[in-house]
Amino acid sequence: MKEVTLDCLGEACPVPLVKAQKALEDLAIGDVLIVSIDHSCAMKNVPEWAREAGHNVEIEEVDDGEWEVVIEKAK
Amino acid sequence: MLKKFSEAVAKNEYYKLWFKDAWPYITGAVLLSIFQIVTMAVSGNPWGVSTAFANWGAWILQALGVSVEKWYFFSSEGALAVLDRGLLQDPASMRNIGVIFGALFSVLIASGFKIKKIKTKKQVVAAILGGTLMGYGARIAFGCNIGAFFSGISVLSLSGWVFAIFIFLGAIVGSKLLVKYFM
Image (cartoon, rainbow over all chains, first blue to last red; front, side):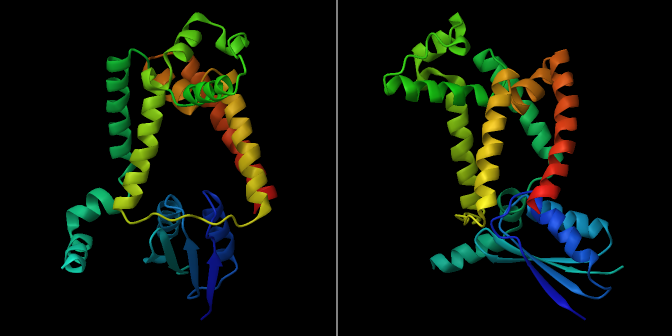
């Protein structure tokens, strides 16, 4: 089980979403992708996409205006 | 005491619902529609954003001694009247300032304020290029996605729908270019 961190700090929509989609493609089932973001609209569209795609998603608020979206690849 | 209070607020479900979490799109849509109606009723004009920025630029140039009154864009009677009345008498400018402060308030109360670092030179180039194209495009199209698209459609103008079709096509091309050159 691998854990990969994707640094999307300072990047605006839709860059974090596209990067997260690409990064998750390279992972195997059970691997975890952590997307660091500080753009509030990515806070909405990244988890939304991952949940819709059927993965397990958790959001952690790391700091003011900074989040980690933890995605466990489920299929 | 203060710490206890802020911890209690952070856990409060209404604080989360109203201030912390993003509102659903439908709530935003309904509110924007109400604000559009209020704007139309109070100021007599539909909601616009980017025209005011052109006026801000004109006022800055006027302050520097440049006369913009003969420029084609500002030469109409209506445009000259807006320039003459100034910032404080321009509903569109006041509204834009309100949007800026409202946005600041909403991130502060959600404790989401952060000054973001510039990551790459590419971002700077993209921001300047994108901003210039948007500003230029909005002016020659007589409006941006608020003035031409949202307001246009809300007053049943055909131009709003034409704008919608082409902004959609432009967004497809733009996102392809973004993925190709920016990722």
